[in-house]
Amino acid sequence: MPSGRRQRFRASTPKTLRQPCLRQRSVSSSIPTGHGRSVNRSTRPAAGSSARPTPARQRKGLWTAAGRRSSPPQSSCSPAPPGAAAFFSRFPPVQAIIPSPCRSNPPAGSARQNTSRGPHCTQVFHMRLPIRAVTPTTESAEIIGWVHEVRDLGGLSFFLIRDRTGIIQVTIPKKKVPAEILDVARDVSRESVVRVRGTVKAIEKAPGGREIVPEELEIISIAESPLPLDVAEKVPAEMDTRIDSRFLDVRKPRVRAIFFIRSAVTCAATEFLASRGCINITTPKIVAAATEGGTELFPIAYFEKEAFMNQSPQLYKQMMMAAGFEAVFEIGPIFRAEEHNTVRHLNEATSLDVEVSFADHNDVMDLLEDLIVHVYDCVKKTCGEHLAELGVDLAVPATPFPRIPYVEAIEIANRTIEEKLSFGDDLTPAAERAIGDVIGQHYFIVDWPTDIRPYYAMPYPDRPEFCKAFDMMHPRMELSSGAQRIHDHDLLVERIRAKGLSPESFEFYLKTFRYGMPPHAGWGLGIERLVMTMLNLGNIREAALFPRDRHRLTP
RNA sequence: GCCCAGGUAGUGUAGUGGCCUAUCAUGACGGCCUGUCACGCCGUCGACACGGAUUCGAAUUCCGUCCUGGGCGCCA
Image (cartoon, rainbow, N blue to C red; front, side, top):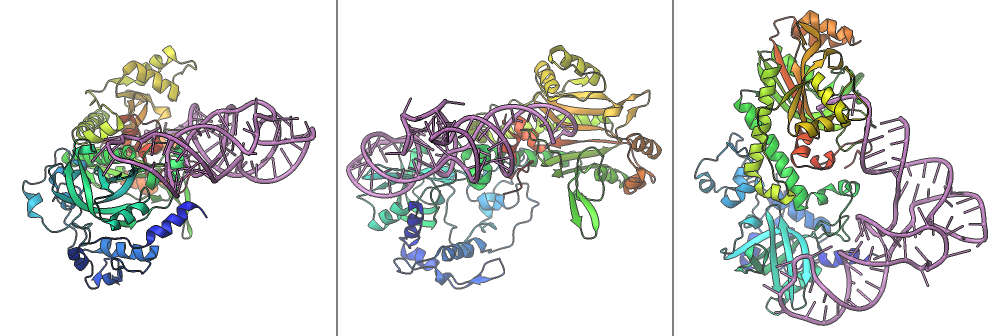
């Protein structure tokens, strides 16, 4: 039997040193769990009891604690992310770790007024301080976190405890702490969840200038050993291994930083678009027909009908122009059944889609570049620490982005690439990189040949072989594509036919063009690509929590 | 889908026919160690993807299967 297994069972025995007041608090009567059942708290093993808590019993105790809800969640009208504001309001220094749109400032004093616990806070754990909040001047603290590293020097041992706010050192001078704490410390494995309460000492030698000497130490959830990958990053892991155990991979501060920043990106984009009058919509992801032909669709069984996963909200956001919403946006998943296998493609991606009435392609390009700048600016202002973790020195792009006609773009590319492009070719990745090297910043490619753009792109009236379509490029790759759309019903039908598609299968869409359709324009932007290029990530899978690619369907 | 490269302890690697009962690191376990911060030192543990073939002899060569990474087409 592996030694790790043996250790796990030994560590499951209750080894908790509690103060009398804490004992009292933990033996309250049955409480609602918030999960449709009640759990009697007194089932938790008493300190020093000889009862062996099974892993199931341990989890039960956790559920009890985690499920407790003293009050309904606060309204989400608060500018801060729902839930997060209340949860962190007691610890103002920590708010900085939750990226929030940079224009949103919580009302002064709100942190102090709101003393009720947030929806995630619990009775048992409400004394817990985020690790960030423990400073050299803190007198005593109770923290809960994961065991990041253990260094046993003999008479002295160091435990690094990590939560999402940071890492703190817990120092155990073996001759000075109670034997019960030593017993627990001996059984702790890396990545276990532990609760530590103790005095805080300002020590220059310790990380963050402070450390905790424990008066209580409790294993809340033991981690099996060996770990599927090394969270402390002494040994690297390959992408595949990392995704197999993504929940562990994301515990790495560096990986976590990517997703904190991604959250800031989507929050900032949402806030920006709302401030420009765009209405946040949600459109169907299960659809009956292809949006624009071309890309492959994932078929699904929909009762007795044939259905597909949506490849783009394109048709629906245009329909909302006919609905008179005038400006809409959506951040949601898109599905592409293409069998590509590259570092910049996912089969399930996140798209930020925008559509605006009474606007042309130039108007929405202006909007897009303003959004990019706003998002970069917000990330730079609110995510400094996460950027530092990733070693990224973020430069906010300058506007206006150069707008290069397609014809010029292929000329630029042809100066350096081997396989020359001719008119009517789409840009190859090599061409994108060649142009990116010349331009050196975000840019647009405009005035595309009508033939290589979707049917809904508006041709120029005076030279219909070109259309009012554009791509927005990062020097490394395409981030967004958009266009002014055709709003004339008959022209649209003509273009659908010209693409070899059947207008009949688009009737639900075409119908909206017959009862008053305003001129409109819009674009779609890949969130993973935006994050990938912003943070200079080598693989788009780094920017998706649970990437779906050609071969991966789990986790 | 096409092309290329791979699959060796939990993780990351070395190893191109006998020097391999397989290297190094990390890890786990045991021991020593009171200021570590990738702690250090000693000892122990743990692996050649699967099936077939060639050979006196295969981690190494060949064939097949499964799996993975990257490039391309296409796209965001």
